[in-house]
Image 1 (cartoon, rainbow, N blue to C red):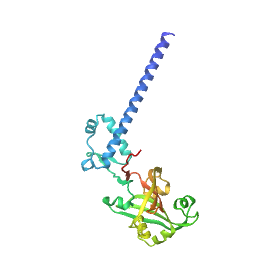
Image 2: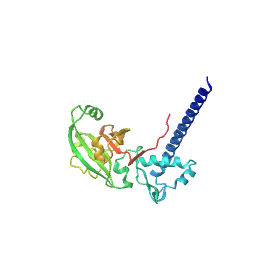
Image 3: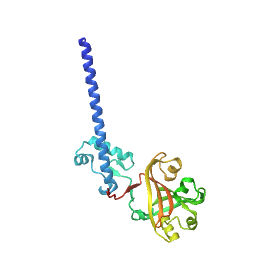
Image 4: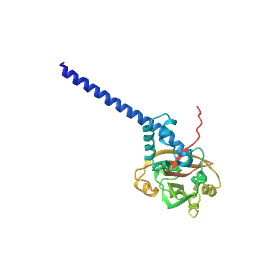
Length: 263
């Protein structure tokens, strides 16, 4: 191979190595930024920072033994989530709060969040409706039989928190038609109407994109991720009485629980 060609090949290989190394460094910094964002997010949500103000970037870099560039990238991730904001002359401050919703106890939303403020319900739709087949199967009623359908927008201290779609067998739900659903959890009403306590619930939790209707009601961006909780609640005697599809604003709620290992 002529010398000129060998020089060009060597230069090309060197350039390729430099590009690959640069990409590897960027990928490593992105990984570290994501790890740091996860650690900081936990602190944000547990009020670990006095006056809701984060330490200076240099302090965070020293505390977590990383570079300021990584700290900035981590803060950018949290800013994109709507959790923090940069204020000139102040620094990075917490601008959003998530409320804890426990998954290890069967409680209504007002019971779960009572220490954080007042939960109110806007009843958007309520009345008998033919049960779709999947609903009828879950509630153990004949397909097409009427069930009580309720759609509620739930607020915490006036802020939209969740959109709840509820199906209840009509022999129980009929007694709820005149109840104060704006200020009372359905769980309490079910126990009062049936005369027995609730027993257990089967739950499924997943992230979904908000559809146009849900986004508008929750005042969330269209397509934003929301937490979808599907819950089938049973009375103490085992009868299923409440099938719910609850869409939580993902930027205002955090699910938690205590899990025990059993083999």
